[in-house]
View 1 (cartoon, rainbow, N blue to C red):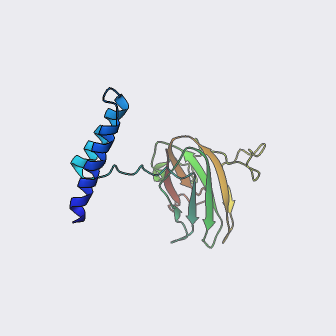
View 2: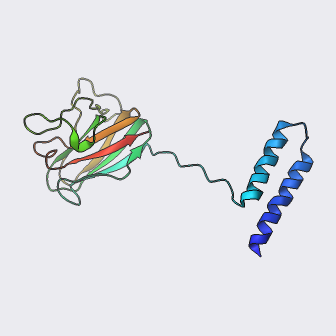
View 3: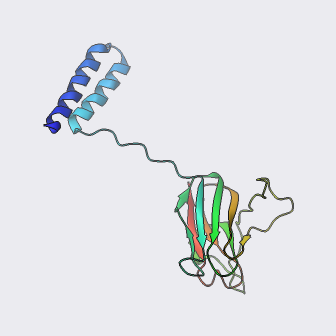
Length: 178
């Protein structure tokens, strides 16, 4: 019964809208077309896609010591806050590197650490660029958490821990910025 009433209600609404609109008005034609399409397909327009978040949680040290897991695969461009949690039993760090490569395929130095060309320098604790701070990594002691705020342009980023041996052990992930 409900399947019959919905198309009838939509058809009635389109007749009322068409009757109320000026036939020379382009606005009325647009409303009539939308009502007719909804009547024809029997479906409402899909809801708009949600916007990408401006923050993400990055968990390190879980489910294994050298795991690095962002909660979402993409974030919106602009000022982004990463809520970082170190669930591991050793210190880790977060470095964001803008790159066209997969996070596991970055060039490395002789020690096996990822080269930090294209790294994004985080803001200081007061959300202003730390004066003279050119190191891109933020360290997190065992069992701690904290925030890391960065300005990100659209593109692909590698999220890595670049402490000795950590990148080689697989501590990296991809993050897309849209």
